Amino acid sequence: MRELERDSLPSPLDASPEGAPHALAQGDLVVVGRGRVGGSLAKSAELAGLAVRVAGRDEPVDGAAAVLLCVPDDAIADVCTRIAGSSASLVGHVSGASTLDALAAAGERGASTFSLHPLQTFADGETAVGGTPAAIAGSDEAGLSYARSLAEALGMRPFEVPEESRAAYHAAAAMASNLLVALEESAAELVEKLGIEDARELLAPLVLRTASNWAERGPAALTGPIARGDHATVEHHRAALTETAPELLPLYDALAVRAEAVAGESVNEVSA
Image (cartoon, rainbow, N blue to C red):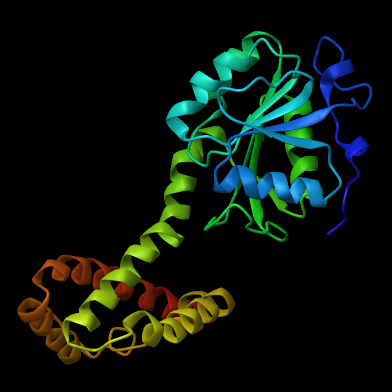
């Protein structure tokens, strides 16, 4: 993906009253937040040749052309209020669920606001973001343009999500990532209850191949007893869970119902 130079990032520092940018501003991007996301994005920005510095949520952001808040969702509004008097004409956040309303304090004093949510999981502060999709939004053309250009400069693939759909979009992301971890931990715990060691190591190849198959084939990647209509085996599963791990039975049942629906979708796709 094309790498953008720092000077190509549009900014409304010299914008018209309507918010349309006339010229490209010179100045730093300040990433507020020293956690995993903030650290990873700051490192990626530095590698991309952008002028970037990192600040804690209580530290000044003087001289910033743009500020990117990488803080927990419930802290966005408070931190934004604190920096609202800074020189930054662009203020954004990286939340997947929060709308631009969380940046209202910056917008009220004339800044363009934006959001840039990397659709990725960050296990540490050095996670590479190249090739990662990024959900973007902007309060005006200047904010949206900056979000898109920043994402592209970091090697990400920007796409727009309507503000009213942010929570549902983030729920999808949580299902694909956070809840997947919970599901795999449930499977590993069940294996360990059987006295089998190294459950995660044993299950990992299956998990990774399944994810790869789904990425390539979608619902056609579904295999196993539900996909082939083997209800007897499913009932054996349920009986074993009732005896060994009854707390997991509701989870199994809910996923089995969903798997039956996915199997039906796969059959319909083949028949179409």
